[in-house]
Image (cartoon, rainbow, N blue to C red; front, side):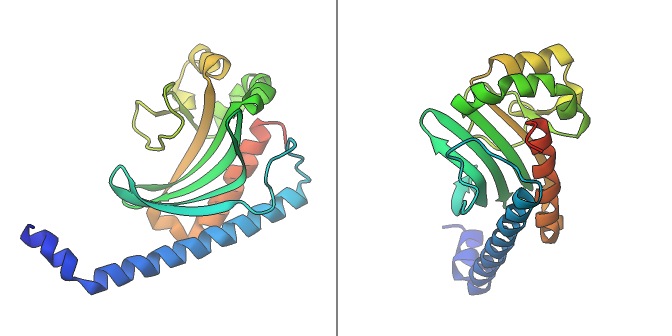
Length: 198
């Protein structure tokens, strides 16, 4: 091991602090879920059948591009033939992101609405996933996400028309972690407006 690696191995304070931070982020995500539940009730949002808008799931991992992350999927539906998920992701060392993921039957259901509302996607500082290969990348590199308002309308509508999955996202700096619920609320409502659910 290098000297730097040994320092981290020995440093209990670093490891304890990381656990405490993870616990605090988990609590913030739990609070975010509670607030989104209230928004769903307040705006009487009617989701397609089968979508979990009661519980959701908070999960964590240690190795998305070598860095830890925490995720709240709520509301959500993950099935082999259909995906609908509003994902809140806290990616250590990078950003907070909010992503609407549509795939399979539910993408078919919403595709024409997305195309019709493409101007909303362009007007709200939303990123569109331009990567046609996999829906499981969340970084904001140019090969994965581009700001929708920087795309030609024809290019935007082509992606919305033909990609096998659609993801729209927004991101915020980690320095604003205490405001995650507020960001989640506003972004969730914007995405529901894009789907004509609000």
